[in-house]
Length: 293
Image (tube, rainbow, N blue to C red):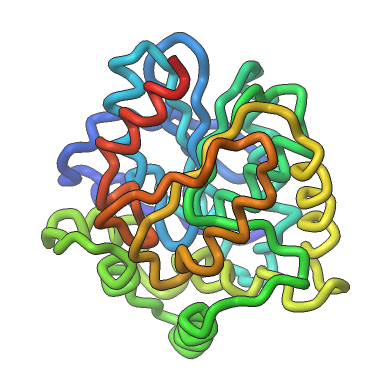
């Protein structure tokens, strides 16, 4: 399998992200993750087109509260190796990488925190792939895709944009999904893992991995996750940005609430877009830490 590795120098000037990456081998790829702190583990999984940098604001309150923060970069993102063949990217491969991380680090008693594509992958791991390793779930602006869901018009426009741009521009995708006016330095940090078009196979392929029919690849895994969540009795917390253009609070967020029968009522995060970790990360980190306490 051909893959590329983003040069380390592209990460040297990133501000407010002092955490050193750790690496493991999986399927011939060097996979990166952050592993900071001690205590009960909190596993945070990113989506499209972000990387572990997205969780830096949430990490600080959790570390202060005495938790261990584990934040992987999915294959094709961040400091992880990037297969250059679009066909490599599948729900099956991404989900297997998450389970492998749990096994290699031997994590147990995990609190799962997911957003965007981190949701389908992390929730599958927590219900089907390795449910015995998880104690709690925090879901934010995400969903489970079984081929029966209705995607918003904004998502369809996004999908078409991604399909028509091989050299996908990263910065406008981030800025367009946040309420905050992000600095050039922050936008550059999100673009750092992707020096050229070949490195962007991960961001390019994620939208097409959402199954649009019940017989599409990934739909069966999504359905299994859906059914397992409806019977799940573990504590869960659901947060949603009030200004998410991709997965709007009404009706998507309210509908996702139904997947978590034991959750408290959905908590709306004011002044937050799809990447609510960027808009209100410190506030969310404190909320999760208080909930865990």
